[in-house]
Length: 176
Image 1 (cartoon, rainbow, N blue to C red):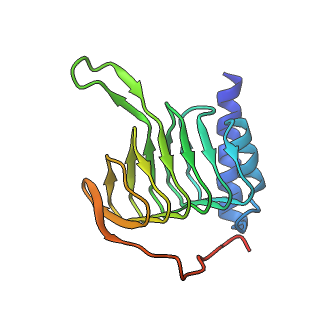
Image 2: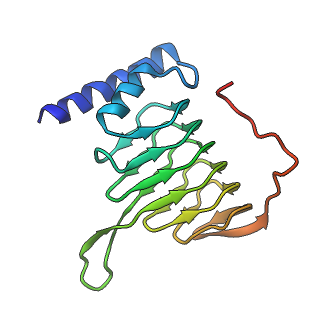
């Protein structure tokens, strides 16, 4: 009960801090406290919008320089691991929960997201999915199967639509 009250208070403070002060990337002190209470393993330099929902304590790892837009929902029933340089627009949903289709028994299946991944607005990534490095997921996509490295994927369900070569590009870093 006390943990739930603290979660609510810190989440509200983080949202209020975001709305009033619009803290820069890497400067979100109230959000940092909220994430520590939620036992989220966070790297240096993160950014989160407001109204972020994280279902369970633990089972969430954010690498270096991760940015998640407002209104994200993270259903971490199993481990969700996000590597370095991740960016997500608003309304990201990560859901590591599923059910056996025959017995309807609830299950948790991990989600793994590689380095330098960008998700457009309203992207949903479901249980058991691995996304490679250097990937763009198009807006409104629902990822139900693994996505290989070095590509752009989009659709419902999301699938690779073309290769992506970032070897000659310096990626933008909002944390400089």
